[in-house]
Image 1: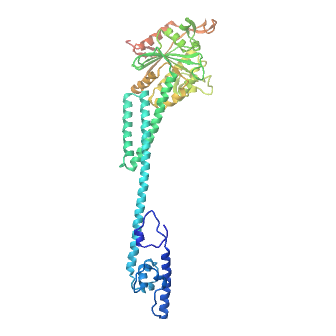
Image 2: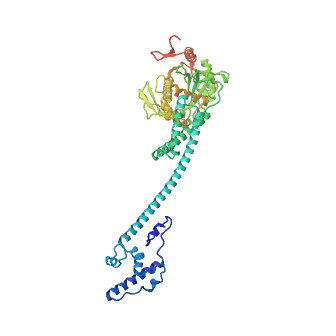
Image 3: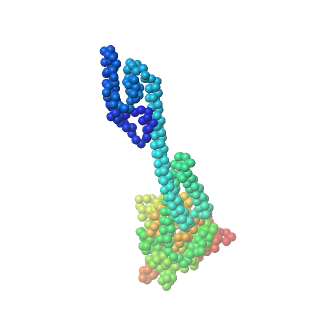
Length: 516
């Protein structure tokens, strides 16, 4: 605002969006005439000269009324209204028509008018700024709630599609999320909401948007992983959460992706009864004598069936145990190592202290050992450090898989390591479980959280040199079949498939529970 001399009328006409005009030429002329007037008065007083007429310039100002004392009129209406506060008192005393109280009142009224209008201007400006800010905040919240609705809808659809959570957990989770959503909408969209309420609701919305995004990625990642690793299976049971079933774990002795073929060094028939919560692991030595139905019942070592594919391995084991194998899980060295690392390692109790040939920088302690993926793989592959050779290796493999099952089925591990497990196993595992069956098993585990009872049995045999199919009829070392051991394994498998219980005696031997 310009630095001007202005009167009360100027203030009353003051508008917030314009400047007070500068002094006009007329005002400047009046100021010059006032100086001339004061000089004439001083000369008149000093010389005792008679009174004089007003100077000519003043007579040209038609806005001055005709008055007997034109100087007093001028002083009253213009000069003293703009007198500075430090004007000499003697000049004021020379003008008896001037009322100092009136001057003070006019100046005070002018100041009050200025302050009042300035205050109103400031309030209106702040109101406009707040209104604009409110409009901006409302627009932000509108966009935020739209994003929130979209992410929540996609998350809900992905979770329903994956269908891995039990009904109770799913209902509770969505109930809480819907309640939080209502609170967020009320706080962010209502004009009566407090500022702190809007801030908290905004933060909650942002956190939940991130949660929905991560949950959607996990859900879609699970579906993609399961569909990519599963193959069609005509031997599946109708409900894996209610019916007992068999599956084999075929461990190929190669690194890299699962499409690489190799010898099947790990061969384990796993019988699961979900109702009783029992699992039986029946291991077969890699050099065991078997017959391959899809190769005219040719005899070979079990490990060599890996060269011809997992279906050949399944056929040979079905014939050996006279049972139906419903599923398979094909893994290799890389699979085992990646999976164990993804779940944070496993705890294994070793019967011996030894240094694995495949990892000489590490020594296995007798007793409890926490193992990484690489350590567990070296532990499971070792046989030269033991008198029993391959038989002890089979026991160690069972210990590794037992520890892996216990760790993987714990709720905490499934939640915390879920995404890492999926990302680590992509392209490194093949199975005939369908996506729906795996999700149903996970759902069953979360809902029931059964305390799985794990039993371990190993088929034994003798030593022999026999002509094998894979060697073109040349003789090779083969562990010959032991009929009694095979019959015992059949009995245990059938007992669990019928829904009956197993037990372990004092010597650690698995038997059918008494009364069965």
